[in-house]
Image (tube, rainbow, N blue to C red):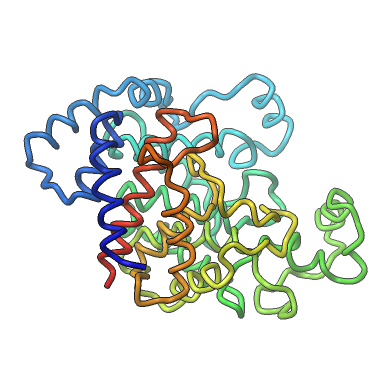
Length: 351
């Protein structure tokens, strides 16, 4: 694959994207991909446009003083009937909206964002993890990866509580470099449970009638591709953790399995998930994997990257954009295209 081809694609798609993109897409394209200086008058004007961007203002306006966003009555009723946040839709909404706000050029000093971050950390257990959002039986590594991603992107990487969360994630890394959802993706494979319905199995877990989920055990069961990607997605946001051997081993785990089906049916079992373009990118995908890998320094020198990069190039449409589906969605496709050209640009520079 010629790097000149990649550079041409980046230049062509960037030029077209700049002509039509909404302010936050334009900002990240100019600064991250094209390397423009923050002091450039065009960048400064785009920042001002980001600040006035209606979807951003709506999210800031609806964020309440306690750090939460309102949720639907039915979801609120279901949440109130259980143990309460972080179990429930309130926590999911916080994680998703914090991600969207950062995408739209927002810092933690605006609105009640600091309150939202502090509320998330108020749910932290002494071991370092945060329970939820689906139950209070055991922590979910992929959601803890999502949480630490949001905490780090808002500048909290030096907070001892954030470091404790990162240390907990690293402490449960498995023998193959990946992570799993406890119980659901390890104990569930034991002969006495593997044919049970998940609901019945989880009831046994709730009662304490199953063996302990041990990240250092179950060596015959591989880790989960997408759980691993979500953990790395969080840790890779901090420059210190990017250099950690454990993080690179986790990245190798999902790079070695690119385009392959996940072993675990509990989370994105089909290999089709690799080639789906999505925005917002709440969970993993092939584009998300390449975004992480190039941030971590993977480039043309690693032959494993060639096939995924070729797929990304071939997925580009004749208009220079990448589409979420065959029915183009202008704003979502702008974001997806922005991520794609950023990946290709960084890949080319990682020589």
